[in-house]
Amino acid sequence: MIAKDSGPGRARVVVIATGKGGAGKTTAAACLAVYWARRKRKVALVDADPNQTLARWHARGDVLKELPLTAEHSSDAVLPAIEALAAQGGVVVVDCAGFTSQAMLFAIGVADLVLIPAMTDEANIFEAARTMKLVQNAATLTRRQIEARVLLCRVKRSAVATHAREQMSVLGLPVMMAQLGDRVAFQEASFFGTAPSVLQPLGAASRDITQVGEELDGLLWPRPALRGKGT
Ligand SMILES: Nc1ncnc2c1ncn2[C@@H]1O[C@H](COP(=O)(O)OP(=O)(O)OP(=O)(O)O)[C@@H](O)[C@H]1O
Ligand SMILES: [Mg+2]
Image (cartoon, protein in one colour):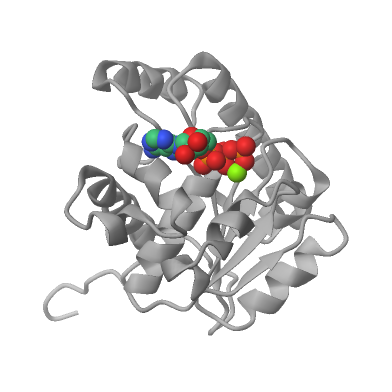
């Protein structure tokens, strides 16, 4: 169960993090933000990467531009920035840098869900496992459970994805069922400040994001268990 300690009205904080550069963090952050905004959720973005890739994507206009973005990567300021946005409700999407930093650790410390993008190679899986250790340490520090899921990104062949899933299962990593294929539409979207769901609503990239978003919805806003008849 996620977000047990979220107060009523507090946002779900989704932190997208891995120590591996180029795994697909910013792409997932931008596309999921658009996914939730189009489902009428209040969405705020935090770019916690000094490279400011998400902030540039955002500045290009179109749908992403309509969402508030705070660019804050200093370890002193990132936590107050996330907390101020979280108090306003909805969902706060935090895009972290592609290396382990104090800012990343602080963000993970207040996350309702840590999403760990990983491509289907050994180095990405190794780094996903390290990021998961960081999540576990943050959970110990904050004395609460912090949910985390690995998201397979840029999947080229299903056979490789299957092998990657087996490897992660051996390492005890929780992996999302949904995954993002290696699709040009994700790269195109970054040029236009938008997402595949806007550029090509019926395309494969749009479908991928919808599946990832729906799986995350089930984790972030779980439905109350149905009661049996007569209970
Ligand atoms: N599913 C995908 N299909 C095709 N290209 C992708 C996909 N996801 C990401 N890319 C491309 O891979 C590159 C790296 O992606 P992205 O910037 O999202 O990764 P990142 O983890 O945020 O990187 P960094 O660590 O540098 O911040 C970009 O050129 C992006 O367009
Ligand atoms: Mg990035």
